[in-house]
Image (spheres, rainbow, N blue to C red):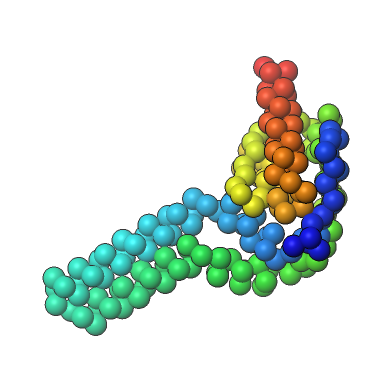
Length: 177
């Protein structure tokens, strides 16, 4: 919705400011734990199959149904945002409703958020990850900054930022070699 849109400028520099919502935190968390969620769904499906086999082959309906239910629970909790929403509401409530300010320029990334502020040079940035709802900039395995795509006025504006970040990462790699 427009009332949730932050300010983003077509740069460089890119100055971005937005209010963090629970949905922003959930999509950020799900992107970071995507592999874990896939493993959870696969395990849940495997347990579903085992439960079905126990019920059919071993003729143990009680154990088979319980195993099926446990597998279904794994699939639902890993494959949906339900558990993540609960975790965010419980553990990150101090971030919800706060303002995040980010600047992407030739020096690097400057961040000012409720969880801290600082500057990270492009030479320290190693990766850009994104999906259709969020952009995450990382240093190794550690997230440096994240931006929900809802803050951009258009997909082209979001693409301009990601293209800029990719270019800065590539340039920093060639100068540090």
